[in-house]
Each structure stands twice: as structure tokens, then as C-alpha cells.
Image (tube, rainbow over all chains, first blue to last red):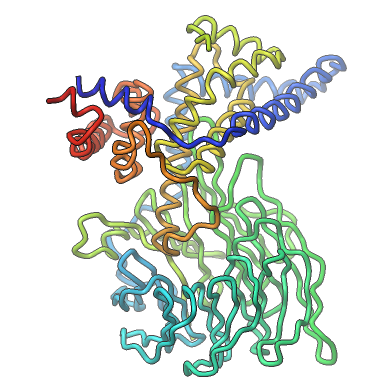
Length: 405
Length: 182
């Protein structure tokens, strides 16, 4: 009886639904259906297929039939095993960071610093954190407070802002921290003094410092423009329309490119620094993502070259799979580094640009993937490592990989 | 609204595969509300539920030509809906842990009508348990079917279901289905 009552409650519970939601979806689905149906019909009218095409279609149909039919379950399992096998066998714990360096990891309890030997320390009850350029400090935010914290956990200074502090980012030369507070973009000196407004209206995207050490900062304005501003003079140096829906901004490749990422697209924009004139935002190149029905779950620009790593999720009717892609400098197409079933998370470059760290929450693993030669490595039990004493272990987020040299 | 039986639904799928926009529209009308409700009960976000329901139908359109007409359409659609809702809920949980509870979008106010207590209790369950409870008790799939949909061992489905129901029982005793359990 209780089950029946629960069933009834779930069926009848009032849930919010926008009055036009069903109709909105109907229009989109009907349009998609019309697009699908039109080529099929015109293809039938002009039927003169090439033998090779017919053969390919025949094979595809056969494979599809095999996969969808009950008898094809074994084949489907086999395909699943093939996909899964591209991930390495995981080690039980993080004994060392491949390639060295230190990691900054955000867990539900706060940020952790992971040393090269895998040992780790919780910095405190902060909601966000990012490295200073040489890893001597961490800029940490909690509520309206921005703090500079030593990697051992000792707070160096704190300031209280007028609104919640978000996305602190330390300038490469170490003299400034940029952060968002409500819609404002603000900067403060590295010693916690001289806190001031830089821009009044920004989109909810972390700003990105020029890696050249020239005090230039890129951000997305509330009006959807990619802006470059000099943080000392407050001079607006360049502007261009930002990628629609942009959620991540990175300035890397020795300052020669800015990466914009949205849940659906990736764009790389060249930046030409000029000694006697303002920097120039060159043309933006959209990086092609494979297939339709995908979403981008992570992207990162290499520190010293125009290579981009991206994580995409393929939505398919028989389940999701994720792929790690590498766009080498200037390449037209990406190279697939790894495919796994389920969803992957964020991706981070090693400071020397030789490896990638990819989060795999569904498998409770981190994957360390070499970009060139070398063996991939996987480390298991990540959530428990960063949730000591907690009843429910949650998977942490990698915020940065710092400072090999 | 008239509910199609299994044969009627198979006919609609066949006609949609053959190019009938009316059949596709009928399939949409028959299943959108169920897809939306299932998605909402897992994600508890109206905008996300709308996107998930829409995406599921777009996936259905994409895969229509490959769809085995002998298989029922409804569980196939629900499998896509619930898996996407779970992915969304996991991403959202991670985002909230990292960025706090602030959202770019203003959520619709929580419902305070029928089953408000149940909704609150359901929302407090982990997404994995919510999905299993919704599949079992709203959409009426068996644990075996749920295990195949979510690609989980059947024991995992049973334990998630048990834990979810145990936690809902507290709310149930307060209102709604508790009255039948007394």
C-alpha cells in the first residue's frame, strides 16, 4: 500500500512547468524531424547510389541491427569492453604525481594542496582557490572574504569585499590578484592592499591574465564582449565579441592565444602583442568538435604552445561516452587520446605541457595522459582520499597543477 | 489524452520512421509530460528538465531510423531521460560544491501544493537514489529493467531503492503516503 501511495504522490505532485515548455520543445523536435526527413526523401527520389556507398550503408545497417537486436547484446557488450579498455588499470592511491609539480584540488571540505609525493593537506574552509604564479601562496575565497594562504594552510592576509568573492586569479608576475565580486571585476595587490574596481559589469566567467607579465587581463563583460584591459592604467586595450555562452576563458600559449569555451563550442583567438601599439585580437578559429549531440565538459590551453585539450561527452541512445581530444597547434582536426564510457570531468595541463590530468568522477579516478610518448596512468579512490572522515565521499575538482620548475 | 497501447505505439514509430510528421508529433504529445516529470523529479530544476526532455526527443529523432520497431518506445525514451538527468544532477552537485549555490538562472519557486513534503524529501536524496525511485515508482519499471537501463548491477539498484525509500519514509509518515502505511 505504501508503494501505491508513493506512486500516486509522484504522479500527482505539483511540479513547476513553464506553460510554453511543451510547445517550445515541440517546435524544436518537429524542426529536427523535418530536417531528418527531408534528405531521406530527396535521397529516395534521386536514388543512384555509388556501389561503395551502398556497401558502407549495408555494413552500417548490419552493425546497427546487430547492436540493437537482443541477439546483439553480446556484440554491444564487446563494444563496451573495447571502449573501456582504452583507460589504463588504476593504481589504488596517488603515490606520486606523474611528472611532478603540485596540485590544487577543491573538495566539499575545502581546497587541498597535493605534494609531488602524493601527500596532501587541507587548507581550510574555502569555497574556491587558485595558485599564485610560483605556488608560494594560494588565493582562496570564502563568502565575501578573499585570503592569501600559504600552501601549509597559514593565512597570510584577508580582505572583505562588498559581495561574495568569486574566481580569484593571481597575475603571473605575482603583483596582483583579480577577482569577481557580484558583477564587478576587482584587483588587489599581492600583499592585500590597494583593492580597487577594474570593471563594473562582467559575465560569470573567471578572468584570465596575460602570461607575458604585462599586467593585461582578459575578461568577458556583462554585454558579452571579450575585453582586454591593462590592470595598472585601466585602459581598455582591445575588445571583440565573446563566444556565445562562454563559460571558461584561458590565456596561454606564452600569451599568443586566448581560449574561449562554452558547453557546446571551443574557440581559439590569436593575440598579437605589439611593442609600440595596443595588442591586437586576431581572428578567432572555432575548433571542430566531432559529431552532433555532444557537450563540452572541460577544456584547457597548453601553457607554452597553442595546443588545446578538450573533454567531450557524446550523448547516444545507448548511453553516454566521453572522449579526451587534443588539438595540436594549427591542426584542423583533433586527435583522440582516450575514450571511456560515462562522463569525464575537467582537464588540466601539467606545467611542462607534457601531460594532462583528466577527472573521471564516474569511475572515481584521475587519469594522467601523456601528450606525446609514455604510458597513461590512472589513480583510483580519489573521492575517499579527499573526504577523510566524511560519511559520503564526494569527488573533488582539480583547480590547478603548479610549478614544475 | 488517449493513451496508445503497445501496438498503437509501434505503429506510430513505424509511421514516423516512414516520414510521417503527424506520427512523430503524436509520439511527442504522448510522452513529453512523462519525460519532463521524470526529468524534473531527478533534477528538481524546471529549466534543466525542459532541456533534458527536449534533448531526449532530439536523440530519439536522431536514432529513429535505427530503432528496432519490435521494442517499446517508452522505456527507450525514459532510459535516455533518466541517464541525462543523472549526468546533469552530478554535474550540478559538483558545480555547487565548487561554486556555491549561486545559479546563473533564477529557479522557479518550489511547489507547495500536492506532495510538497514528498518533493522536499525526494530532493534531499542523492541523485542516484532519486533516479531509481522515479524509475520504480513513477515509471513502474522493475528492478531488473532499471538495472539494464542504468547499466548497474541489480543489487545496486535494489540497495539504492531501499535506501531511498527508507529516507522517504520519514517524510511519508508526516504526510501523503504515510496515511496508508499507518
